[in-house]
Image 1 (tube, rainbow, N blue to C red):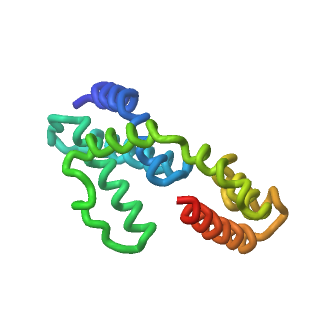
Image 2 (image 1 turned 60 degrees about the vertical axis):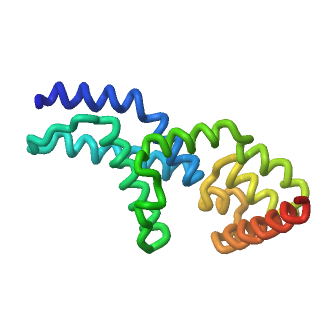
Length: 173
């Protein structure tokens, strides 16, 4: 396969599937940075395979791409949780799994809207940290800088906010 053919295949599959894969990673990780990294890694692996010296022909490029995305996501989970995540946790047809998950998330009320409803019931310090983290999408380091606090303060406050939030939600159910 020529370089131009590879570039055309990559460009076509990227244009048609980028948003679906990125959305899936974003909804699963709730982090733009991680979703971007995982999506980039997925397409980078595909590009490396296509540009390799192998004469192996890929019959269904889209299915192959979603197989790579599945592997990238499992590898991310294994690294995050330091353990084995069996492939059986995911549907055999990862593309359908991604589609159904993304559609379900897009139909549901955004996490930010749900969170805003409960912030007024949290202590002010906890509400501020959660708002900065999940509404304004700041990193922990950015929150530290904005509040003039250290990382331990921000992490502890966020953890306490989650506990308070869980208690509030459980009592309202």
